[in-house]
Image 1 (cartoon, rainbow, N blue to C red):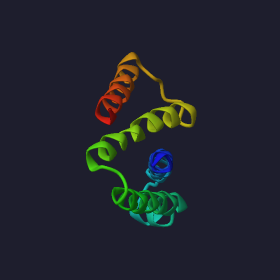
Image 2: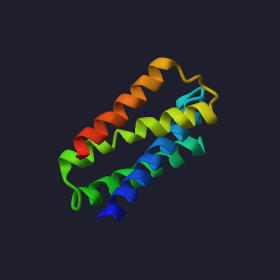
Image 3: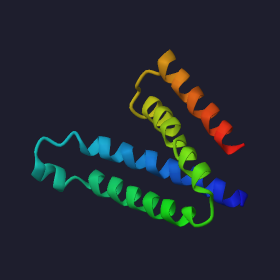
Image 4: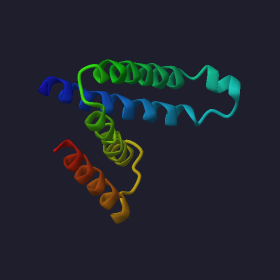
Length: 109
């Protein structure tokens, strides 16, 4: 059972990285440039991979635990946006992440 939780964490990381690639693709000036931007396809493929893993894990994990745990994606997104995009981490964002962690712990127990 623990392997599914580890894989769930990996799935959330994949989802966050997918968002990063779509963020890179958003810099395209036109629809044509967007359609020829490799980042949209990398991001889309990563999202698809994450969605397939999500569906697969639903078979093995309780839904009432699994779904709240997918909110871990927001934590990875915060960290990735800070490290890669150099976005600031505010006190509100830290409080939000702590709320997510506390919520996941409460639901998982």
